[in-house]
Amino acid sequence: MLGVANSTEHSDMVDWADNLGHYPYPSSRRVVMGCRQAVATSQPLAAQAGMEMFWAGGNAVDAALAMAIALTVVEPTANGIGSDAFALVWDGQLHGLNGSGKSPQRLTREQVEQVGQMPQVGWLPVTTPGAVSTWRSLSDRWGALPFEQLFAPAIGYAEAGFPVSPETARAWQAAAPLLLSQTDPAMQPFKAVFLPGDRAPRPGDIWSSPAHGATLREIAATGGESFYQGSLAERMATFAAEAGGLLSLEDLSAHQPEWVAPIGTPYRDLSVWEIPPNGQGITALIGLNILEGVELARYPRDSVDSYHWQIEAMKLAFADAQAHVADPDWMTVTPAQLLDKAYGAERRRLIGDRALVANTGLQQGGTVYLAAADQDLMVSFIQSNYEGFGSGILVPGTGIALQNRGRGFSLQAGHPNQVGPGKRPFHTIIPAFLTQGDRPLGPMGVMGGHMQPQGHLQMVVNLVDYAMNPQAALDAPRWQFLSGRQVILEPTVPHSLGLALSDRGHQIQLGLEPHLFGKGQMILRHRGSLIAASEPRADGLALAR
Image (cartoon, rainbow, N blue to C red; front, side, top):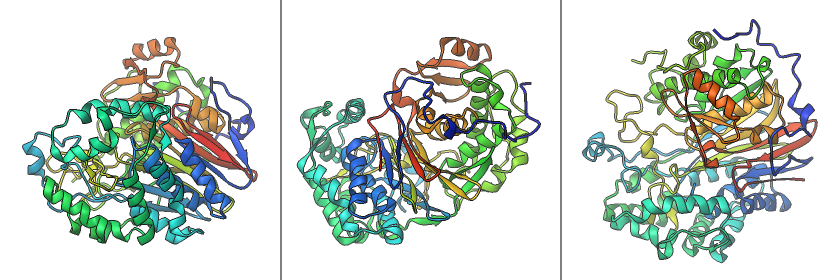
């Protein structure tokens, strides 16, 4: 067996804040520091939209929402008006908002089984979009600026156009072949808007969507009411009825975001917080519980022992999450059971020198992330259409591209996440937040499907066990567990480390595309300063003042 700590105390460790000028890995970026406000997200124009709200007298919630709305325009390859969203907000205590939508009331398991599996595109995987309701709920509770003002940058980008940034262009081009191959007439409006001339935009091309801008104007003017009970809702429901979709006016009008109590776990001298299920944030917490009893800092950061422990912990965490996480109304195991420290210790004892294939130990009965902070509020926010553009369904004349979150359901009979009507599916998108004692450290997140909890775990380990500053923690080479014993490594991981992991039984592949390893942002508070960092694998930008 590998070495396990007798204690979880880390009093002799160097703190990340002691290394603000230390960058052990190549990077084109440095941490950005300010005293008053900070933003970080994956697209520079969206980051600027957030700062515009601060300059106008707004707060961190206003800035976060302006970024989220702008991202539906400037990074449509990952999110849109038809997305879901989740948020964590610190205002002296931590609040959670689950803005995910439910499946249509007319969706049945038999409908999916008729086509063999839940398809990636088309109407069948479409669930009720919740992002608009999330924007309104956050603005109502904390916003300092008028709701309509938050839309101004996004409307400008949509109507006047903007230059497509390199990573967004790459994702656009990667999605094009699948979408162009579709013959379903319901997908023609999408192709006309997002693939004009049957091609994706190239980096630097100017792209615009006046219909998207008009829809944002209507959402802004009606406080989102039109989207769920007014003319926009009618247009969505009418198109669904005409084109073979299941989404109805009843589904839209019934949607409500849900305020939830965040779930968390201590790891060394800080605590990590996530939104509870139906999201997969609990996966990161389970993995950290398993790792907590390991003296990880005794091993060099880029050593086989450090990687092996982290991969195995994450593997066990995924086994539990995939077996149990679902809409909480259908779960038969509670988050408290999954996060029990004794259970974490029991799972840790399964880890040996060789890679294992994990099963659950409990028996049951394309995304955008952004962070914003000021001296009073801190926001961790994420929204997504799921797989790239989502369903490939665009409501004609509106710019509303609908998500394909139904892909998160299971077809397994009796599974708590089994596909069915009126259910929230298993969700990959997860905002995170860090605290130390009763003090907020700040928001962090890593986009990218099932890379997200793995990215959260790796960021926390980098900060806590290896005392990296936020930018260095984002720069460091990453791994991603896939399934079984399969693991992909970034090309920047030392070749000798890949060989050593192979000797331990891991089936190692090289992941040549940076987007395979997520796109993260982070803002941490230290001695009155805000330390902001943005992912080097994306087009992102951190700004502070």
